[in-house]
Amino acid sequence: MALKRRPQNNTNASEDSLIARVTVLETFVNIAYTNTGGQVIANNTATDLTSNWVVDFATHPTAFVNGIFTAPVTGKYQISGLTAYNPAGSPTAGAQWQLFASKNAGAQVKVLGILSTQTSGSSGVMAPGGSTDFQLNAGDTLKLAVFQNSNASQTTTTATRIEIKKVG
Image (cartoon, rainbow, N blue to C red; front, side, top):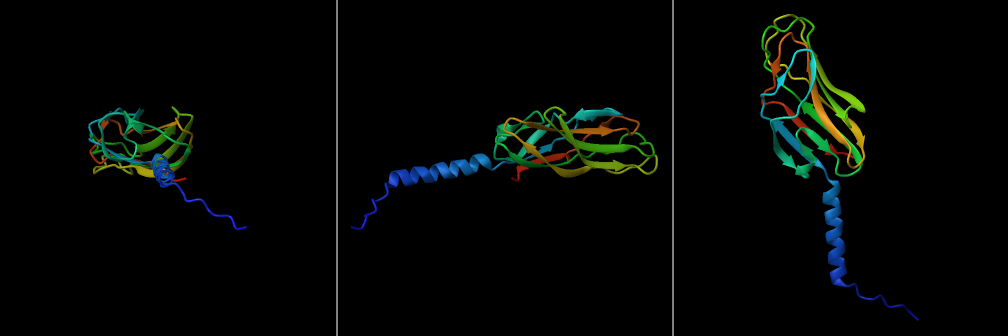
């Protein structure tokens, strides 16, 4: 006796398809924000980039608030960033401009980029940047911070940007 296949209920198939699509959207994380500039970075001080962010695009817009990204799902995340300054004053020779990311309020810190002036009085836009990966659990946080020791306070420009995407 051959077994007959029971017809699939279209309602269940549609619900399954919708659930699959929602699951994909929940696990796809890609955000990008641009800083409108104007955040002052004191000399010889590490400073979190917390203000003046505007959304470029975001699959999870509530995941990035006041410069802090909260992972909506567990996975491997790539953080890319760039911070830019038009140097004020006369930067000293060997001054450094650093951009780094920290996980969970400093539990893990990774440098994204370092620039160093070769001579005193360097001019032009200083823009350290780069990218790195972090393994995050749902609820873990990431934030960008900068450090500069140019001999004067510096102000970020509108070229400052962050992108975070789930890559695994």
